[in-house]
Length: 212
Image (cartoon, rainbow, N blue to C red; front, side):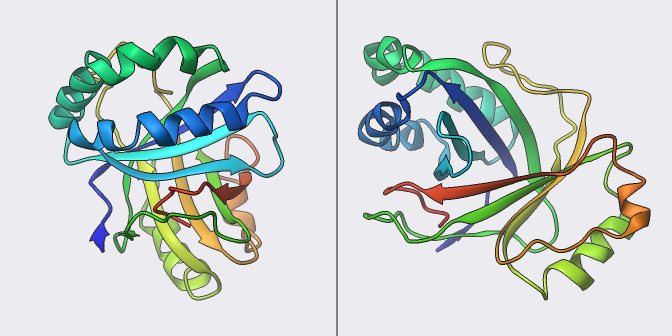
């Protein structure tokens, strides 16, 4: 068991109809160990339960500079060069990416699984008018963490994207958590701080996802 790295990408891909399982099979065969060998931690791969053509995954890095180094090594390396055409052929969009850092207690990262687990976890994204502050974090610790099985919580990483070949969504402030259990009702004061409605994704871990 290890803890979540300090820099995390939450990546959401929109795929061509019916191609999600093709990408997952390729990804888990060719892109797990090869990314980790380049210096990343693969945290989780998921099917979006409510969007049959969406693939969601997370990876982490020790810091921003080593993110740049790891991404340069992988995307300039032999595994990606050999399989990028097959991977890209499944995709419509791969630019929906949030750059995050852990908030509160660090997420535990278990050993990689070998079979799909039952059920799903939820990923909740709050889009904030301003960066997450002490009041929001205190509400989360007092009202959310005791009520559901929180796997991890994250806020926006403010550093600029330092690997321009892969876009990320910049200029947004978010608070994200992964959990098992019913989603809590947001208090009115928090709803008033949002710039758009909360986004809740039900995610089914793939066979080799660590987070499950």
